[in-house]
Image (cartoon, rainbow, N blue to C red; front, side, top):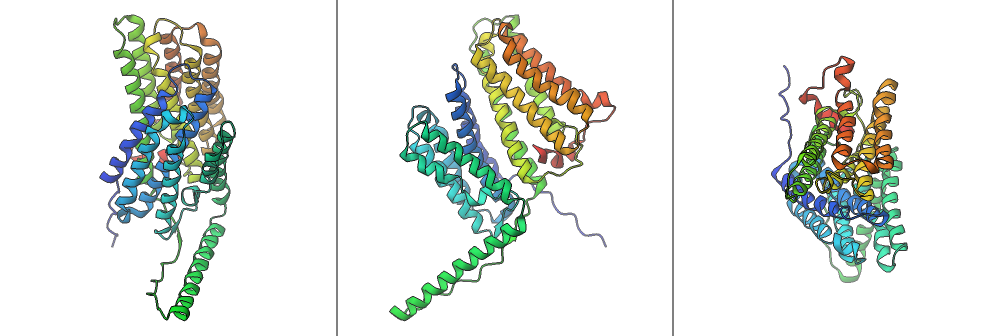
Length: 417
């Protein structure tokens, strides 16, 4: 007799409410890159975006594994923490990062504590559970730039390296966590014996904790959650483009051309990232990526879309004239990073050499050349060329004589973000 079908899990109202704060956070970070951004602003964007993204992913993975046992209070406190971080971004720019750091450290440590209560070990991306990268952030409170910035970068590197290295040996990681739990249990028992001898007090016995197990992410649900994050950053890009257009008093042909090209570029990115499947690379869902590849790729891909959003935010004001150099590099650099991430995913997921040589790497080079040599192009022309590069990717499968992936297959494909 066939077993009954398991109900497909979708994002809960709590998770959707939790996502709201990311909308504001992305908008705040985009503002960093509007007015002639230099290396300092770009660096602050990279580290602040990682901090907010890492908190979001920590609690998203926690809710994914915990399911109905997810603690509402923990999720809401993390949401408030991200809100504080977003509001503190201008303070970070002014050299006053104490509130941002405090909120970040609190959220990461609270996330690690929430994970411990699940009796699950996230062996595929241990950084969300161990939060080793917060130590340099705490230490940075005692230093001024540039040492402070070195410590932030070290914290991010430590976070990523710990996850990448330890996730390669999940059995060893699980055994280490089990030994730590047993050591903690023995320390509690030793403390209780001391209390009984000294004060003739018998503390209540601690219930035996359930055995530790490796966390098994619900991959279709996680694919939906990561995809919703992509929708958020794409929505911010649409808002940036429309806000810039609404500020222009007289609408003329160059403005309309930049609006069409910018909106078309975002539609192409949506298609490549979510509808096309496998992050815009033709892996056809034949490879299920582990989280040690999925999570860094998601950070790079969504971060690149935020960069593109910031570039589009100044496009309308320069539709009939060249974009300022810094803003041109933000827009083109974001596109280059997006296509580079796609190319790496394609190479890892089994894409053919023909695709890499004819679609993946040329898109990266074209975006970089636009940033380098596109100083004389009007804003609308720059956006139109980037749109053409993205459409070249969109047209790959029809040219290869293969049908696009069906929407039902996207849960597996989006894992490669």
